[in-house]
Length: 198
Image (cartoon, rainbow, N blue to C red; front, side, top):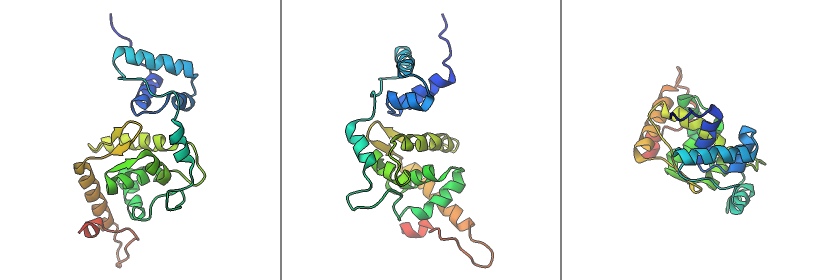
């Protein structure tokens, strides 16, 4: 007996569950009743497409961390100043919107970022929905996979890239910033990280 191929909605639900997105968030994102999502994920668990079921909803401490208006230093939502010069180069290199580019720049600089740290950088001021980060990462993954680059998920904790991916990202940003020098000596405000790293 052949197993029927999962529908696109089922594949998306399973992919989100693998990344640690809770059932309630998957339900809201796919506009499906939560009991339908439970059935889809249980079927995926039974067929081996999923190792374990995700949490029902965000943990209380995750929501509190996502809702706080800044870090311990009182900084507001938004990316740290040290990664801002790399965001335009990453947007252009991978053809991605600003939010995923900010997340990628954070990973490029630090290699590992906690969910709350990435959320504060990616979320716009006043945004309190934790799925903002999940959407940014979901948009980013396929663009990176086209270039053979991957983000490792530490479920419920954060995201990481390998040293090789970090080196490749830095090389791509360096090439792009050098190529962005216009005739007449005008250089954009982007920093060449090959010099900054030395």
